[in-house]
Image 1 (tube, rainbow, N blue to C red):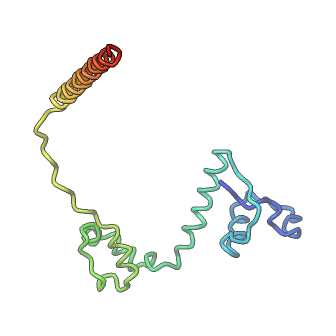
Image 2 (image 1 turned 180 degrees about the horizontal axis):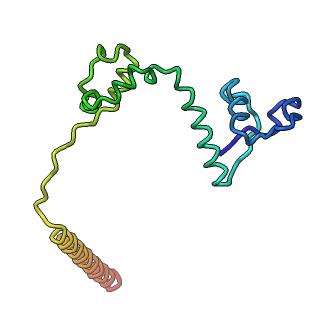
Length: 165
């Protein structure tokens, strides 16, 4: 995981008593300006424990913003707790009118469960399939042995003809 290097923060910021460039809210605020496009120097964090803790904290900040999204309203909370509505979403039966918003409709429509393809019944058992592969390999091996034998026979025949002249 990479985070903005300590040099990416202003001198004034670094002089604060509680400054820690590993602090997720500090990183969040630094990246919020230009989505990190202005960061030139990055520091790699390799500690598994640190990375996991930072990701959890980052996700809490990220998902904490959701208070402004339409799906967090009381109306949508009730709809999403309804088994009937959830089944309609999973079956792909919702309509744009039910969502009152094209973006929400598209978001929910993607969540539908794809129709399952009927299972194919196998003619052979696994054991029969293994035996068939083994026989095929043996046939190919015999074929190659025969071919090599023929090539060797013709090579020596050609050598005898060539040197007998």
